[in-house]
Length: 318
Image: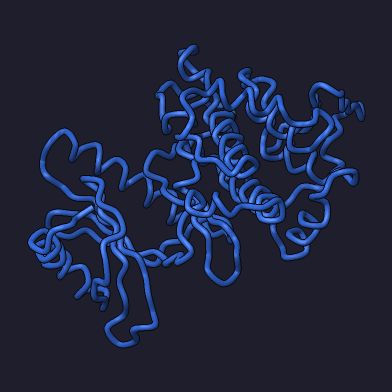
């Protein structure tokens, strides 16, 4: 972060053209992780209207090429989607020296900041919302590739979460198209990315979602752990008949073949014996595209819920 007045003044000057075009003035710097900077801004006409401008700095280096790819990846996703649990974009532009786009301000901050005060009611609500948002992305063949609590934003009034930051995302031709590039953040990267030449990007997202849910259940930032083994050990302390144990063992499964999809996970959560049924019904009533629980069954109507693991022979729909 910028701490000196000199740096701050230079930064504000650097932003003048974007703010002039969009009619904003900078309030504060939210993130400085070169070549990306994120600013909170307010409308010059109405100071109650607040937004966020995210910029990608161009410096004609190898990093510049990566920056350009990340910006184009984000824009490619944000221009295609509109969903209540996925971050939106107001507008974008290309300026001398940097790219920029304007997005809503989520004043409550990130899910990481909310972990110390997390409770079961919130974690249940957020899990269902994240599943709905991620399922929407996957249905449109978009793999996020960097799901983590830092990339989940919380709205101030509606108390809902949105998935943000699509700089590493993949837009793939089919749900079965393999990828070969390791992406993500430490402790969230699925095991198969280190052991296989090619893997399913959507299953990588599911592993990362499992890490996010683990953080909510245990109210701990996963970066506070020394290794992923500690995460797995803590899951084993849960009652093996609880829905939390069931979810975590299935989405954190080291085998991508056995790992649940968003589609399957929502179907499991909707089962009447679990506490998520009303939340999913509420989302469906609000028009969110949530599968009905008959999707749990395959063409032969087979469904097995064992005491050790859920085995789903479900539709291949994402």
